[in-house]
Length: 524
Image (tube, rainbow, N blue to C red; front, side, top):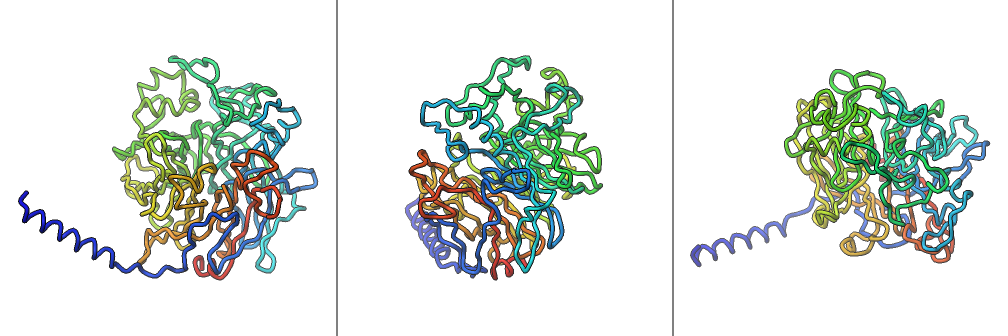
């Protein structure tokens, strides 16, 4: 290349850069919040919040209490009256039972019982009076399904004795079925009763080793079979009963988002929240049940859904005893068939106007992807039952994307996207996340001049993350979980957060109700 060419190219580049620098950013519908490191739940002007319920609050006359680290929130009901399900993802023994992982004391049975009771899900009746939502503490629907509850497993053969599981735990995100039941997902179940190692023939070969951080020490009290965990659990809000669905596979389920195919069959999208794991889709063979159907895994490079049906895949027949084993060891089956490894697929939501599927890929430290992205899947003919799709990036995390580590997603009634972030509690305000400070809630318009622009609506307390975005049908209220405030605390005498009560109080996870003029404007 000649010197003259270099000069001309450089000049053109400078003009281009100057043009971009002068580009006018269209006015936002509100003044976005700047990143904050305050130990507070901060909101943009025009919004305010009230605590709906917090950890350890009694919920019924049976003495049951609201669990720890509330996560996903789902609502079924009318504009003024309904039932919410709230997941409880994991416990922090220090706050729940007083057990100190840093010390050398042995956990007691009493501590184990309290920790197990703090997990699972809470079912709560909520009502609206004079523009304010509250929990009806006298309702017969208020109930806990926890780590010690007996729950049937729906499977083609016996997995544990009589296929009755002991408890549900590590409940992360979930979904709602068209027939009015909730879905709750068991994610990092291995933290409680471990996980099996399997040999080349699929036989159990002892349990995998766990480090101290991810070992709750429960198996010293009950040596449960890990294969009863890692499933999607269907919960009936009216009866308070539950069942574990093996049809959707076993792995670290983050969410279970349900839609209908064009011919009216339920389809469930679910992600495996671990670095280099996969995105799955379940297509039911029944219109009002998820007990039978076909599980697929995504090859996003080829835009194809790969069947995990043992009768359709010779490789599966060679390596697995039956379809139940394929479902139990879904990760191994997916890997064998060439599924695409992803950067921690977490929440999945479907754009109501186009049926486009959006997947939060939070991050992946193994590939040096610190900030994650949001993946967009367009099913062929916009039909959830299609076996082909087009994959592309919708938003890339980082400074240019306006947020880091996308986790929970939700579309509001106007079709705009809301996103929460999940920077690890130990890494908030640390490199490489320093400029993002605490985790936040973001609003992303899907059309207009600001389409695709992430604008911060709220900032979380110290080391907390927001989860469970849930818009109530009055189109005026957003329910949001504030999870693990002070999550990096090592000593109860020195908590790293005092939210929500301030002063010298210990932090408590809680569900908040956000309302205000701005919410009316954005949702109305």
